[in-house]
Image (cartoon, rainbow, N blue to C red):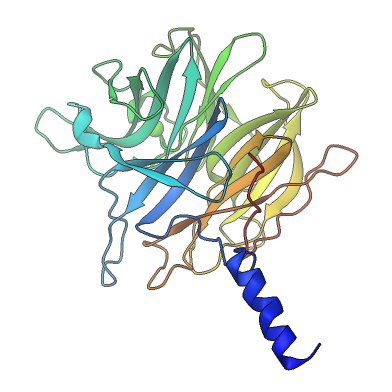
Length: 320
Ligand code: CA
């Protein structure tokens, strides 16, 4: 091509948005811990919010945000719609969360910290907010925590009860998975705000935190942040039953650039499977100033997942 025609060629591509980097998909604020939910023709993305300054050496996560998209490229910001202040029993940070729909209501399971009677920090806890629409307004569904640190004792640290992941199986049975250091699970009653049985702990190779349950062709996938060859990577296990036993299947995604955590969210939408995660690649980003990213997830014929290719381009717009 002549120089002029090459210029024209790239100008056309740029105008069409085809050269534009899409990842991270949210750039107006720092976001982390993606939890996507498909509702009708829209994907709702529930996200943590990194408010740490460049000088901070720990997480500063004051609230949770909701975004939505119909094409996976253009994301609408619905704002900060939930914070630990919504829960009278809570104190501290807005850690990872997960929203599911049941019987026309939207249940937002969150991890934050439990406040003791003397207002001191009583360890990590999981609560539930509920709303009539995907974007709220959300209120405390229980008036107390669903899971508190004392309910699990296999780990000695006070923040092992974080990172809720909720899954409602085809038979209607709901499950809650969560944990840091070990992966725990329990059945949920249909009202979504009460446990339905004993808490169990899984043997899961390399598990650190951030479980996510996904089901495809009668096979269950337990996807999580693990130690990999160096922490954190996304690893996964599969099972023919959600109650296990789980078979370790390897690394799904390598370390995310400029962030020592990574966090999975997997959905099917309009014929494709999508993998949400976060990295530290936004300008002035880092481990405490992350950005949510989106890439495709592909499968092998035997049902195993192909390793995620983390791209700057992200995914293409879904045709309306
Ligand atoms: Ca505990």
